[in-house]
Length: 289
Image (cartoon, rainbow, N blue to C red; front, side):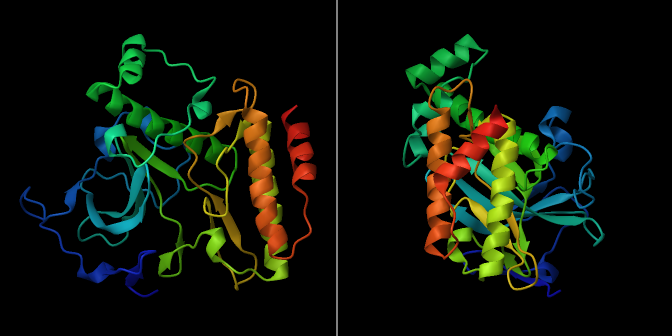
């Protein structure tokens, strides 16, 4: 494999060009010591962990560029590696949530119906919109994403492996396609056979989630990644899950699930696959109850 990678924005970076200072603590700009050992065990991803997860105290995190800028969070490409040990390195996606004053929009409170906050002081701060409350709200969204990713990964739903969470930053698996970031489903043009395979995987993922009484609640062709088109059977990954809703606790849960079904089915129908959103919803509700 080539040592040169490209982010989704087309910015190249080179494994072999990365340099570290192995002697003193003055790391280069864009570098930090790995935060793996500084977070508590519950802030680390589920076991068994993939072999590529780097847990060494000697590892250094190097920021390589921006993968995506969003309305509520930005995603950066990070390399976690042990200097002079090429066997211990991995590429990670670092999703960093913004505090409320730096977001470009405010999430619909409908997503959080049914979620219970345990700390009344924190709840009051969030309601009052204080600086402390805005930071707590961002941390809560990060925690929601990490917890949901951890659950879904453990249950076999195809999501990026969640490596760890530290405050407003969630580190997760970087889903790569050869030397680049895997494209979003919306950016792809699958063959009829690939389209059918992707739909099958999508239905399986949504069925497992429904069995957990969960709906993505913002599922679209932009919140799914695809790897392996043109090389046999493609792989689909579900991403961006912080707003996932409980179908039982959230009074609008089934409505969100129906919207997910309509959005995804419409995309597949426009590309030539004969699927039905209402039939999918019935199948998912049967799995849920």
